[in-house]
Every structure is written in structure tokens, then in C-alpha cells.
Image (cartoon, rainbow, N blue to C red; front, top):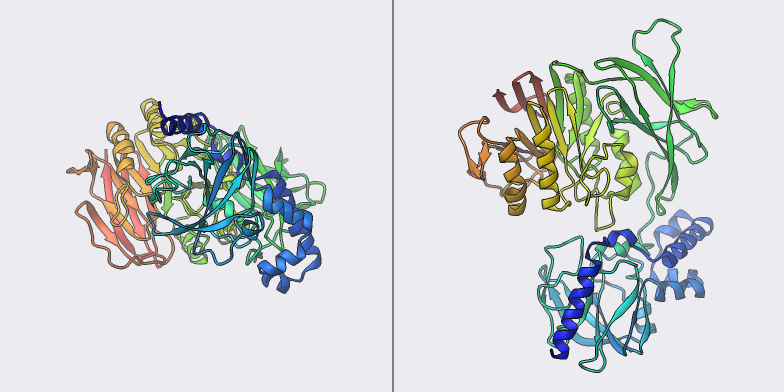
Length: 598
């Protein structure tokens, strides 16, 4: 076997050995994280709000210490090589400022250029290293999303190159060539033009989100709704049986350490004692949220409740004696009973969506719960956006549970959805091979509901859905995930094929999605073809809960109804074997209607 084939085989072995470890298990360098925490804390103490807003690269470099500069230049992306090597750093040409450490560390800009499928061009900087440690620096202070990536080759052609001891720990390794993937959060984006001189090198890939690790330029945000010692953002969800439990979340400032729910049946005799349930407390940090960096988030699960029963409750702290206003929730029925739920597409923490939600509740107070098809906010790790989401829904979600699912904006740039998971308490009954709370199911009355993180492995989800749908006795079956299997301008053939086969086998009644900013309801579909009635196939719905429009759309053959530029919510009235589906605008006008009977 020649040396080139041996090197490629080694690359493949390393890639396979690291594949299952999950890059997101260790996204950042601990040294860089600690250093950035130190820098940001000092900036808060010494700079004005105006000075924070005006930070630029030269100013930041004047304000950081030599030790901090060294860490940011050398402890961000590291590994060891067993033989002398040439390291290539591929930097996006559109980034306005070259990361300071590249020329300082002795890297030289070459005439080589790499391109990807989006037409982005990367200039190539190179440096020779002796066998031993290779230390690389930050992507920059500007949060430039097309993060640099790295190629490594032995200085002596044919030498058996091996890389080890990575920071971040779980580094994915592959081969640099046309068709290679560079960002794990964008699997369709591949390289299309790689110079011959670079082909076959060891490729170290990354995620676009790593560009946020040292973000300081234009980085500092303020929330319009900061926390206080009084509980707010009171939200109902379900993490266990909706008939006998209720999950409740809320937030306070960090100095409030304890949380409690006091509740009792509505209509109980005057003077009846409240039942108390303790809440778990988790501290959440958004480092760049200048006016509310830290909060405490509380989560309580009330158990042993009576089905189909209204309860009054408030949340707060016995130590500080601060309490929320009293509100009401209603448990699910334990037997046959009519019920209503509402579905909404993308909400993007919009105040317009909040007005739509309020109107929907005012017109349909009997609604049991609200489902949201992903993209709840614009950037899932910006807590100020979640603050807006909770503020605009504050008069509804403290009285009726919200049933969320993850969209690409809620889990952005490969950074994970930890903030979403910290803010909502949902069932942890998803399949192994997926993150907890990303995928779940529950039953309400005579229906099963499945919520899926569309970024999950297709085959894993298909097998898990088979289990859920095979064992349920529910008459009605609903599945919700963000990307629409059927929508003009968006195409997800793998979803249609892999998950669609499960929908067909178990006759899922409706699949609910968002992502594209228009409304669409398909004819009933089975085996990716239109069928005569909902009794034979699945109806796919795509909706948008904010005012938006996508110009130039043409209604496809599979669409029974398509609407553009209309902000809508959908109601589902279920009474035994009859379903009445309607789409309403904010004025209460009906734009679509469907009746399904079994």
C-alpha cells in the first residue's frame, strides 16, 4: 500500500473512531472560556454602555492583558502532530479583520484559494511546525459565522502523520477534498474547489457557532424585560402525565434561591389549605446580556392531581415572601371528552405573534394547550429573545400549557439547545441517540402527540416513532417538527421517504410544521402521492404565526390550500371521532377549514 493510501486509511480510521462522540460535547476551550469570562466581567466594571457598543479590534487589543492575548492566540484550537507538519488555516475572505494571531504566530498568506457550494472563498494561511504541539487562536472578536477550518499535511511526503490530544476534545477528522464537509451544523455545505496542493490533507472540521466564543464587537445586548426578585415568566408545560401532573417554570434574579408552588382545587371550601411543591433551581448565564447576565430558573412538577380538574396556583419564594399572581390550570380528562388545541408555526419571539396568541385565547378560552412548530425565537442562545417570547405570551402560557418543538433558530450554529431545554420542562421519553427533551411524545384524551427535533437522525426517529405508534391505542395521531416535508421552495426528500413511510404505515392524521413563512395544507398523501380522503392518507400543514410573505410562490399540485402574507393560527376541535380544523387570522376570519370523521 502506498503512503498516500495509508494516510487516507488513517484519516478514515480516526474519523470513524470519533464519529459517535458528538462534537457538541466539548464545544469550546476551557482556557478561552475562562479568559473571555474574565475579560467581559472587567469590561462591565470599567467601560460605559457606549464604550461597550463602540468596541473594535484595536481597542480590544489595547484593553486585554498580555496573558489574555496569549490564551486567545494559542489555546483555542490545539492538537499534537507526531511528525513535522504543514498546517493550513482556511479563512473566509469576507471577514473584514484578519485574526490578530495569524501573522503574529508566523503564518503566511498563500496564493491558494478554496471555495464551497455557497460560493464562499477561503484564503489559505500556512506555517510549518515541528513534531509536537500545534496551537491556534480565535476566529476573531467579530462573530464572523464562516469560521476558519484547518488542513494538516506532513512536511515530508509519505510520512505517516498522526494527530492527537485535541482541544476541543471531540474533534472530527476527515480528508480535505472536493465534497468535504467543513461545518457540522450545515451538512449540505461542502467544498467545491480545492487546489491540488491541498487535496488529501487531514481536514479538521468545526461548527460556525465557535465564532461566538470570543465575540466582543457589537456583541453586548440588553433585555427589555430584565428579571426581578418577583417571579415572572410563569409557564405551564407537561413533563409527565397531563391527567395527573402539571409542570411549571418561572424565573427570578439570582439572589432568590428557593422556589415553591402553592396550589389547591378551584372551588375548594374557603380556608382550605394549599398544597406545596418544591421547585428545582438552575442558574442561567448569558454572558453578553449586559443588564441581566444571570438569572435563576425554577422548575416544579405537581403530581397526584385529579383528572379534568381546575386548580388555582401561585409560585414564589417563602424566604423572600415574593409571589406571582394567582392563576389557573386544568388537568386533562381521564375519559372521553371533547377538547381543543391550537397549533402555530414560527413565532420568532414577535410581539405580533403575542397579539395573535392573546386573541386566539380570548376567542377560544376552552383551548387545552398550544403547540408551536419551532423557531420560537431568532437566536436560541440569546436570553433577551426568550424574555420577549415569555413576555408576549405571559397572559396565556401561565393558564394553558405550551407544547414546543425545536427549530433551526432555537438550536443554532451547532451550539446546542441547552437554553431551550433549561427553559421548558417536557417529557424525557425520546429515543437513545438524541438529546433529552429534543424528542418526546404524550397522550391527551384520545390522541397521541409526537414532537421531534428535525435535526435528529432520521432512522433513529423512525424506529422510535414506530414504537410509539405501534403501542398507542389513541384514535388520533399528530406529529410536529420544524422542516415541512411538503412546501414549495424547500425540499426534504429524506424526511418524506424515511418518516413518511412511518406516517403511512400507522396512518398519522396530520403532520404540523413551520420554517417556511407561508401557510399550506396538502391534500391527503400516502406513499408521496395524493389520495382521495383523510381516511387513506396524512394531511400536512405548514403555518406561520408572524406577519410575513414569501414572494413568487406557486401553489403546487399537492396543496389543497396555500396562503401567503397571512398571519394565522390553527384550531383543532376533537369530539370522539370527529375533527374540525380551522385556520384563523388575528381578526378571527376563517381562511381554511377541514373536517375529518372516523
